[in-house]
Image (cartoon, rainbow, N blue to C red; front, side, top):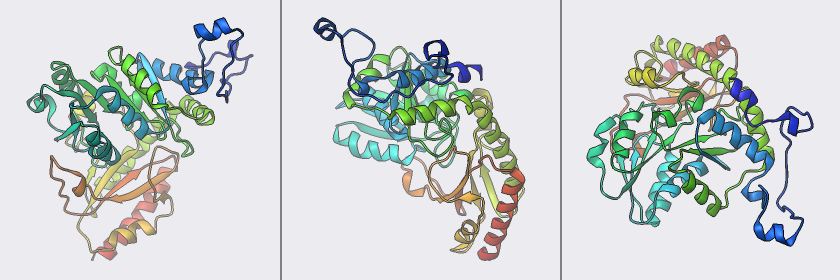
Length: 382
């Protein structure tokens, strides 16, 4: 928690101000032709870094322990940056089947056009992923817990198998953040996160980042520069501001999320709750071994009901918004169907599925809202 407060700021170098200043700039001037030709100084052009971006990168390095941090204009941009930093024409990628759908689309579209072949694998595979590796497998991608359905992966076992064959391990660590899962300590070479979620924390910023260990720091930096990725200074400042309160917010999201999840387990309308920190969850043992906490995002499977019952439930909710993203102060609920975005595994729930994000509202009020919604579901489901 102290690193969150101290990272990336130096009041002594900021005229005494607590927060780093927002530097809006593109052109950087040199004093002489000789300095220009020698490219002296830390800054050369706004796209390649400013004091504002350095402040956030330095803070993230301190928290995550990586050798290089690169900022991106969204979480998806950070994902694609990591993939392009490790893959080229003729390479093979192993991708978890429960991955974030836009990441899958990037693999099936852009990477395929670039001549990279993707094979999807069961998130429960663990060290047996070695059986899927080929001589040209250059990267293994994990996302734990899985997007929408929250399967927990054995990241150290997968990393061990990948490294034995000189493949990079990339992980989407948005759900837990570096506070609750230190990806590099578990064998991940490049960890990516959507700072749009918990880092920003207020549903008002789009930002992502990738953190690489020493082995992949150079590739990440070079690819980041070649792609021309940069983030606006005001978005960086909002991310820095969110960083200072990340620990206290995340602790509330965790506690509130678990309270709601346990309550939902007791409801007759609910078939199961997909939350890794619940003792009933198939991934609980791995979560307890590797993670130090949980966020406020999880999913539920309802018992079968008539068409329109989910709409009856969700349309009447007063405190849960119906919208994409998560990690902000607000609670959210969206229906989803993962059946058409799985190719290596079969997703076959008996009833409708809903993803919930538990925000910072009073938990009692959220439970009352959900109770009324489940009553509407039961009535409409027949």
